[in-house]
View 1 (spheres, rainbow, N blue to C red):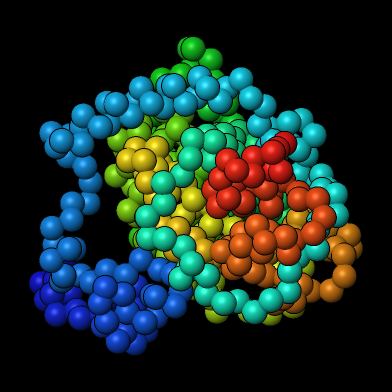
View 2: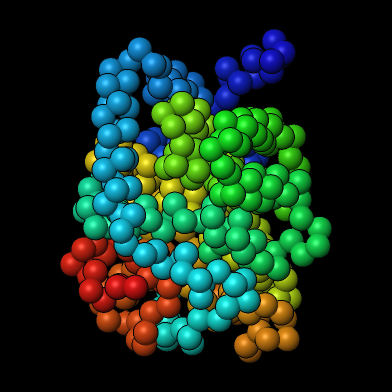
Length: 371
């Protein structure tokens, strides 16, 4: 970093989000108005909190004992959940062109900023944690076998798939077809591609490349955090702050995409929304497993999504029902959760809607969310 750049950063008064987006910041603490309205993590470069917060966990710190305990916890968790079939990995769900049954009627309501109804710290119950873990952990293999995930539409990139997604597909295909003889090689390739992606993120300029890179990093992170060794988990932890930063950038730039005019435009916008939600859910799940609580419930509640799978599952524009979705079909995540608990979502839930509700409603509703 040049001396001039370092000096300019030392004089930076805006929060990091406003500074990166070149937006005006009112410098309120602990959150500026813009970050508060959007449910974003607000930090100031020169605040004592930023100066004292380490970017990675030192191996000699007290958290190293927690990490050792967490290795055992993960082994127990996976042993517990391995006997249960996962809703995403059933053979009937792997075809990219599969259709869900018609989605239930969604509530039409104004977005009322549900963050005020969600606590700062949430301690998810065991059922919710294990259910969310099984679902998210299945995404890389689903991608390797079908070329799509609940946050990556099969027609998102068409025949011109960005390099980041090509690498992610090649790595996952190799990883889930590995043998004892190729295990070490496959892991090295995974680590090298993850490092390469982190470097490429610094040079990305287009929103399309940013989306592809965040999606690829999500897939790598899921494998390393939940399926890898302690070494891979430690490496992935070091990249989590970068994933948060680039997820926030994706969210901010995606805000400018409104009123899509075509099916392809809607797929792109909805892929951004879903990718942001999955990224924040992944972050929340990992730290919930490690420390027993989640601090991002308010952020999650403010994220928009269109939980209408009949739109998402259409393989071509000619099969797409109706016209371009209206804004009323896109809800804040918190609004959707609260509306369902209050009985304002009628009809049978599809699998993506169940996935969204699992971390919000808990074990009290597990019979209603059963696969």
